[in-house]
Length: 143
Image (tube, rainbow, N blue to C red; front, side, top):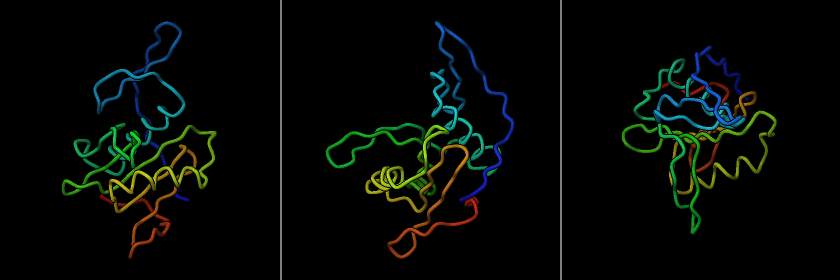
């Protein structure tokens, strides 16, 4: 597990019809502020502000085909025009278990990224693909 020190970021949050919305800086739109969206927004800010990943190379919630199913990944970071890192975000009370790992592995079957990340905001695990297997790493991947 990796300890992620999230930056303090002044998120734009508004309330409308008894629902909270958060402004997504990368997608330039307001989104319903769900517990999972909170984790996703904080993780993206961490990637951009702390790890200095280029915002222009980060895709959020895009649809892909996994077999015959249409799925939406949370975050994909591209490097050299190919998927480099897939991030699966869950709300804070979701345990990072085998089912979450299987979900991100299903995305990997289509995207073939070098790194897989699963996080609930508190617990973050990073796997690196080496010689056709994934090995958990104990440091965050530098850009």
